Image (cartoon, rainbow, N blue to C red; front, side, top):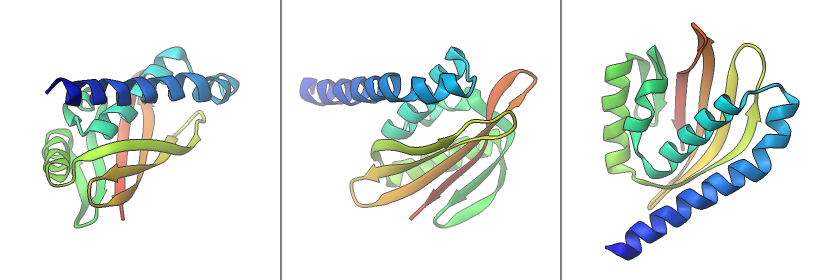
Length: 142
C-alpha cells in the first residue's frame, strides 16, 4: 500500500517539477499569471491520475466533450459523470503536455495520456469567463 502511495507521490512530484522547470519560460513570455500556471498544473495532474473531481471547479457551465465513443456538449455535472466513467474504464497513468498555446482569447493544451492499455491524445481548451479561467472543451482521442 505504501509503495503505491510513494509511486503516486513520485509521479505528482515529477509532473510538478517539469511544469515548474519548463513552463515558466513560455508562460511568462506570453503574460500568463502565476495563478494560471497553478491552474494548468492542477488540471494536468488531474488528467495524469484520473481525479476528475479536481477538475470540477474549472468546468464551464457547458463543456464540449469528445471521447472515442461519445461526443456532445454537456452540462458541467454531466461532463463530470461522463469523464469519471471514462477514467474508470481507462485509468490514466500519466498525462504529458506536448504543445500549448496561450493567447488573450482561447488557451489550449495538447498532450499524451497514457493508460494501462492505450495511449490517447488529449486537448483541452480554456477561456476566461467573469475573470475566471474555465475549461470549455476536452477532447480525448485514440
